[in-house]
Length: 327
Ligand code: G3H
Ligand code: 13P
Ligand code: ZN
Image (cartoon, rainbow, N blue to C red):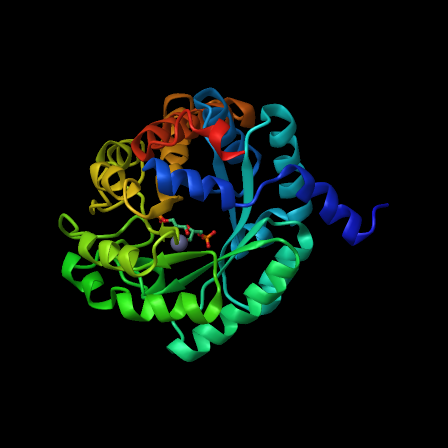
């Protein structure tokens, strides 16, 4: 039985932090895809796409994913991915909400953690972020923090008017002060995106002027775009065709993601589009083969659907073919 420190060392040795990949992304005008993982098929679908496309990758684990899958299982699966691919892989905590959770993830061998205290007043957000940065940096782990507020899950709203998310954009002067006070390694900004499948009632306006102003005030600091699924209409249509019931809303158009990837935005978070791909395929198999009950017969095609969705995103973000310069 390995001690906790040894266990952490074994995991950390093969993973990378975001440091080199963000530098390459910043200078090379692309963004690294950060995909949420909850189980084996999701991890395999993402990793296989990145292997075939020779792309760097960030596998991100939310608090809910930790609870659902158990970190020991997720760590073992990510270790297997490292052995299978030799790719630069980051294991990242998505939306950590307390110091204790971030500390636990550092101790578990994550190479990157996000502390999301964006809903708190500036001073509290900065103080909590600073505390996480101190512990993480002592352990060679990098920290993503957030300032400003996105729509979607964070506001508990369904299909907001595109103008509503524009009310809580990151203030560039605050962003500059925040990074100075906290020493965080990357900054998630609110620039008009929104979490979940029910984002906007109409085409969103992404605040590229805000991204540009933050980029000017914080040269060299990698920015992060959350809530970046595009909610492709064809996948919602498939889900509904095969018995689902999802209202249509608009996501963040893929050409907007490609444009953002060329700015200081170095990490783009995508979860919902993978969920849609998996759900559409499983529904299709169930509907076309109602006699089927072997999980491999629906999870296998589901894994393939995730792989194709990730492959599509790697080209949108420009990170296909970039693995070698990110090691
Ligand atoms: O932004 C949140 C991610 O989509 C993770 O969602 O908390 O349901 O795992 P979750
Ligand atoms: P989506 O819900 O748009 O996929 O965003 C995911 C995300 O931001 C995870 O942190
Ligand atoms: Zn997010």
